[in-house]
Amino acid sequence: MTWGMDELEARAQRQLDGLHEFQEKLRGISVRETSSDGLVTAEVDGKGALVDLEFAYGANELGASRLADQVVTTAALAAQKVYARIAAVTEEFNESFGDMLAARPAE
Image 1 (cartoon, rainbow, N blue to C red):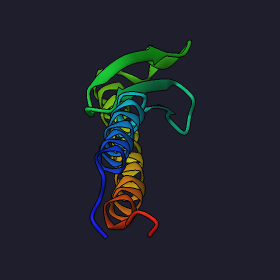
Image 2 (cartoon, one colour):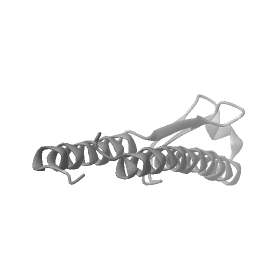
Image 3 (cartoon, rainbow, N blue to C red):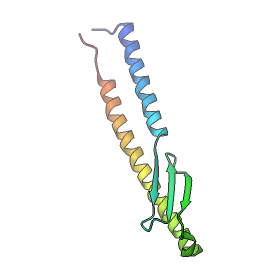
Image 4 (cartoon, helix red, strand yellow):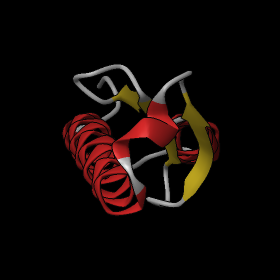
């Protein structure tokens, strides 16, 4: 059976909607991570960029070197979690989009 224009348009629209939904999910990904001692909180966006950094009372008592290490460690952990979320969302998209591409119209 050949596909009619209506079926082709509907399929293309579903694919575009799926792509837009995927992009929105990616844009919405961010992670806030707090150090184990609770003194440093870092937020990383879906691009892996540090977008917020907070210090709890007493953080300055760590000293510059330890505080810097705490910031880097906490931000890196947040970035790892962001990339894990991106991988999960991408895998979900690939599966659903593959199913969508393989779908055939009812005969």
